[in-house]
Structure formats: C-alpha cells, structure tokens
Image (tube, rainbow, N blue to C red; front, side):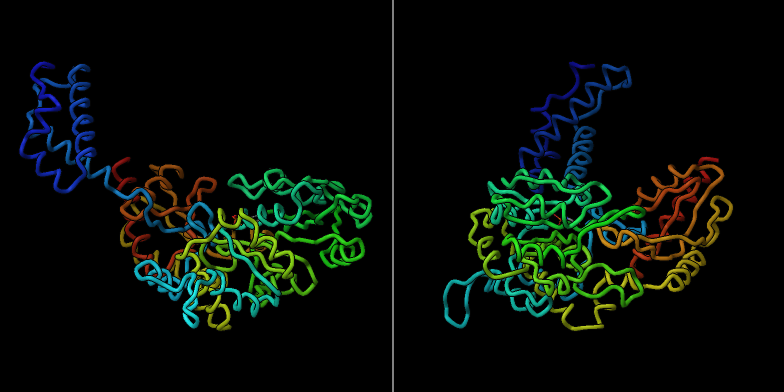
Amino acid sequence: MLRKLPSVEAVLQSELIAALTDRYSRPLVVSAVREAVAGERNRIMEGGRTEVSSTAEIAGLVTEILEAKMRRSMRRVVNATGVVLHTNLGRALLAASAVEALAEAATHYTNLEYDLARGKRSTREIHVERLVRDLTGAEACHVVNNNAGAVLLALNSLAEGREVVVSRGELVEIGGSFRLPEVMAKSGSKLVEVGTTNRTTARDYEQAIGKDTAVLLKVHKSNFKMTGFVSEVSLEELVEMGRRKKVLVMEDLGSGAMIDFSLLGLPGEPVVADRVALGVSAVTFSCDKLLGGPQAGLIVGEKGPVKRMKENPLSRALRVDKLSMAALEATLLEILSGPRVRQTMPSVRMIAETAEEVRKRSESLVGRLGPVSDALSVTIVEGISQVGGGALPGADLKTWLISVTSASLDENAIESALREGPVPVVARIGKGAVYLDLRTVLTEEEPVVVDALRRVADVARRKR
Ligand SMILES: *Cc1c(COP(=O)(O)O)cnc(C)c1O
C-alpha cells in the first residue's frame, strides 16, 4: 500500500494542486502536500486504511490543510467575563472616533512627523502634547510603546548607575512578567528598598537618601489592596522631601485615569492631573487601561526630566507607531469633550453601566434563548464585575450574572463549549456553574451569546 501511495512530486504535479498555487504561495502548498502525504502514510502504517487514497482525495486533504493554515489566529471574541480591561482579551475597546483616526492613518499618508505650516520635519508627539497638557496640567509629555517602556525609559534617563528609593510595599508585579525590581535592574538603576511590606515611613526614605540617590519612586498598588496595620508615605510628602534633598520624585501610576471615576460612585483611582499638581517630576501610566485608548505609555511631568527622556536613544527603540498615535490623539480629544465620554468611550460606558441595566439586558437575553430548559438551567444571580487592567482593585462593581448549569455537562465542559463557536464567548467558571456578565458584552454582540448558549444546549442534549 505504501508503494501505491502517490509521491509528493506526483501530487504536486496534479492539476488539482496546480490550481491551488494561484491562491496560495508555492512553499505553503508544498508543505501542505508533504503534510497530507505524511498523514496518509501514517494512517496506512497504523492499519487504519484498507485502500490507498487517490491523488484527488489527497488533493482534498491538501485544500483542508491550506484553509486551516490561512485562518487568522487572532480573532474577535465576546468578553463575558465582566473584566472590563482584560489584558488577555486586549484591554480597552476604542471609541469610534479613535478607530476612524487609526484607519485613516493606516490607509493614507499623514503629517506624522511633518510640520504642514512650515513644510519641515517635525515630531510625532506634537499631535498629543497640547492635549496632554490641557488634560493633566503637566509642562511636558513623552509617548512610548507602553507603560513598562515608560518606566524603563524614565529610570534609565534619570537614574542610570544611581540609586532609586522604593518602599518594600510597592515592589509590585503587575502580571504578564512586569516585575518592578526586574524592570529597574534593566534600566541600569540601583534599587534601594526601604520600609517593610506593610509599613514604610518618611524616616525610612530620608535615611536611605545619599549622594548617589537620583529618584524617589512611588508605585501605584494597581492590582491589590493592603489593609490592617499599614502605612505609606504620600506623594505629597515625597515631593516635599525631594525638594529639600534635591532628588527627583517619580510615580508609576499604572492605570492613569484622566477622568474622575469617583463621580461614577467608584472608589477614587488617582487622577493624573491631581498627581501632576503635587509637583512630581514625572508620572508614567498606560494608555489602554482606564484612559481607554490604544496600547501606549505616557510620561508627563517637568520639562527638564522629560527632555532627558526624549533625548535618550532608548526613546527610538520604544517609539510609538503611527496607528497608536492616531488613536491616542482621538481618544484624548474624546476625553476633552466632557461628559459624553460615558456614551462614546466603551470602557467608560461599561464601568458606568448600573447593575440594574445589566440585569435588564441579562433577563431580556435569557428570554430570547428559546427552549433550552430541557438541557440547561439558566438563571440570573447577583455578582461582581471587575475593572481589571490594574485599576480600581478594590472597586466592586455590582452586577448581575447569567448562571448556566447542566445535568449532563460540568462547568468546565460548558465553558469550553462556549468558546467553540465561530465567535468564541469567554465566560467565568465558578463553583458548579458558568457565569456570563453582560457588562462587558456589547449590545450588538448579544445574538452571539444567544447562539453560543443554544449550542451549549445542543452539546448537553447529545451528552445525555
Ligand atoms: C499596568 C502597569 C504597568 C505596565 O503597563 P503596560 O502598559 O502594561 O506596559 C506598570 N506599572 C503599573 C503600576 C501598572 O499598573
């Protein structure tokens, strides 16, 4: 049988395959043919064949392999986890105006680094500098790829070969391998830890300051909360100390809210403008967290220190691309247009949605499921959504969840079935049930969730 199996060469020369090279690159077709022939050979060796496949049958296999290879790996999903700024699912969704700006920059030439008034070379940051100043009150700003890059660049520019004093309570890990001490080491600055995990005092900082101290660094505890016997030194006190001792003070703010989320009844996440007003030399934060923009990192602060960052050769390596820059400018304009951000910025809208609104949408969606009760038990229960993305760690956003259980499928089987459709639905697994939180599901995505739940019901029926 092996001898009768068509060779790779023979399959490649068949007319059926020749037609494929119009649609796919030749090396891809060759590798798919090799894969198909090898697969057939294995099946023969394992005794799984009574007859050798024809060239036409192998060509059919090749087509399937090629189609699978050409499917995009990165696909849209429905986020039913209730985590608004879910890092693994891409963090903030952009406002429509940001998407428009991004698409325009992608499909046309732009004045990215070109001064149209003078017909001369310019900088790409000019497009956001004024907006950032208006929003934060800072003298200067610099944009890089992400906040990790911003911290790296800031420390390298201000403290290479010198000491940076940080409280032991703020040596954080953000997840996805951002560990502050490791980033500091790569910046070439020397970490001087002060205080203890739960308590750090002004005296701890003062005693650590020496002739080699370049920066006092404060780090926002983005993804955890410490309660009990705790104390930390405020940024205000650090700024005062920095002035007295002639060392710079910098803050890694993480999420960087531009609007005051306490107006939405949420516990205060520090607002960038308030931190800048305290007189800090530099503040760094992400643009795709609470800010609601594309992936980027912003550094705002005093002219002198920011200039040193701009002139650092690392800046070029951390340079933000034109698509992100376009989306960032549009996002900042959106924020400057005031209260309408509650409608126009998806992440703000999601955070601001009341539990009552989520409950109504959930009930209406369950009402549209049709007959599934023979296979699934679908109810609506109270729960908590998370902002995520290292923002508002203590903020418990009350919500309502669609709870799904089944007599024939356990929670893991339900959750994975939800992920198997043409548009995967990512949900939360709880004790004995799967929970869907519509806070992070767009209204136009609800039919996808309905289809997914009907499919889970089919799976459950087949399992009975
Ligand atoms: C999220 C976060 C970072 C990393 O920001 P990226 O934009 O993901 O690179 C750094 N520091 C803090 C405190 C954060 O919350």
